[in-house]
Length: 59
Image 1 (cartoon, rainbow, N blue to C red):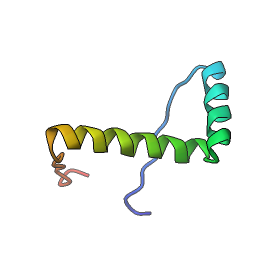
Image 2 (image 1 turned 30 degrees about the vertical axis):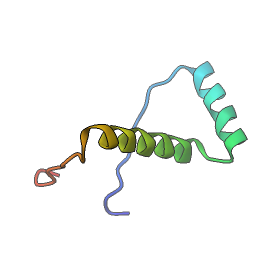
Image 3 (image 1 turned 90 degrees about the vertical axis):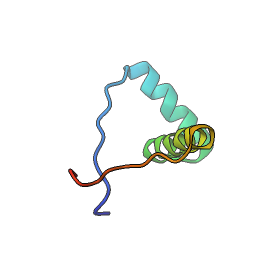
Image 4 (image 1 turned 120 degrees about the vertical axis):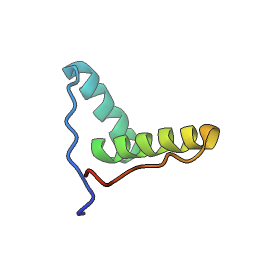
């Protein structure tokens, strides 16, 4: 858990309620669904453009 960070998000109330509905349908928490979507996005990007190199010196 040392590498985990909190990420705040401003979102319209109606959109959030709809998103939570979709998450429940998929059997995921909102956090789990967002992580799944982010991982998929990064994987698709890296598949097309190559691995993203991250410099962790300043973290």
